[in-house]
Amino acid sequence: MDAFDSTYEYLADNTRKTAMDFPTACRALLNEVLITAKLLIPENKSLVSDPYRALTVIDLGFGCGDQTVHLMQETYNTVPTDSGSTAEQRFPPIKRYVGVTLDRTQFHLGMLGRSHTSSSIKIFCADAAQPASWSEELARAAKLTSVSPSSSRDAPSSAKLAESINREIWVLALDTLYHFAPSRQPIFDYAHRELEASLMAFDLALADDASWFDRALLAIVCLFTGTPFSNFVTAAQYRTMLTLAGYDEDSIELRDVSEHIFAPLTRFLLERERQLGLIGLGIGGVRVARWMFGWWGKSGVVRGVIVIARR
Ligand SMILES: C[S@@+](CC[C@H](N)C(=O)[O-])C[C@H]1O[C@@H](n2cnc3c(N)ncnc32)[C@H](O)[C@@H]1O
Image (cartoon, rainbow, N blue to C red):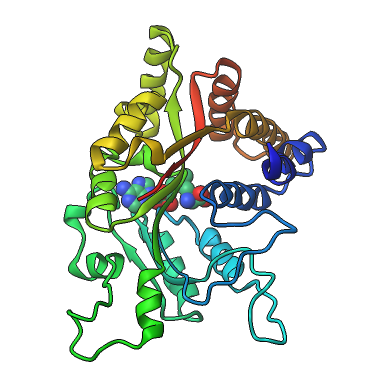
């Protein structure tokens, strides 16, 4: 699996050696999503320089902000040449970043970090699953305000016009959408119709052949973890939701990466359980999580998928 083998597989290799670097593995997963979306160019290749390319990222469930920092680093990780171009650029520049989280603590943490960064980064505490409930400020920040000669009193410069033409809007949801209550459908609809955005995500899906016993067990797990069971849909049902939102069937890609996720995660949790046990700390939650990921890894009942839907 090309770049994935050398990046996220890092998790598997290091867990076997019990020297796992979890943040590195999370960054590698994000990179893999970006590579699948054809935004990040695999190592040793560079992006064809396009000064007018402008990326907007609307990041749903940005967590502790690590992925925000990583995205911005990719943006600025360019090597200017004598001519001023960015020949070694691997990622198009992010001109606007809008982060949304439901978690107030994560929001406050993000605000602390944001004060040192550019004003093109905006973060909000809101329910990303219910865009109808978004404040006017968030809706305005997320929505593209395109520059067009007819809507602007002052004719825009040709550079501004070119930039508005090359603007790409991506909704990013890393390990988040399966939490959305009551469903992912409202944000899919909003992303396609209102934001005119493409979607890139790492998400969970239900195996086509999941038995009734597995489904019942999963429903119990969902009850205890507060995850809507109805979000565990098969890949075919997932595609249908995206096409209902307006995405073309041909522009949807679901890439199953389960083997790189659940078994390595189980090994990581086993090691963490052992370390916590050594210093006498409680390990109940870790044990439950290890059991759950181990079950998913062995049975294949829940699948880890990279989802891309292009506008
Ligand atoms: C498993 S964490 C993933 C965090 C981060 N994306 C990552 O991959 O490290 C899920 C995140 O989604 C957020 N979240 C869950 N439901 C949400 C909702 N309805 N609206 C906004 N954020 C939500 C949580 O606050 C949490 O930050």
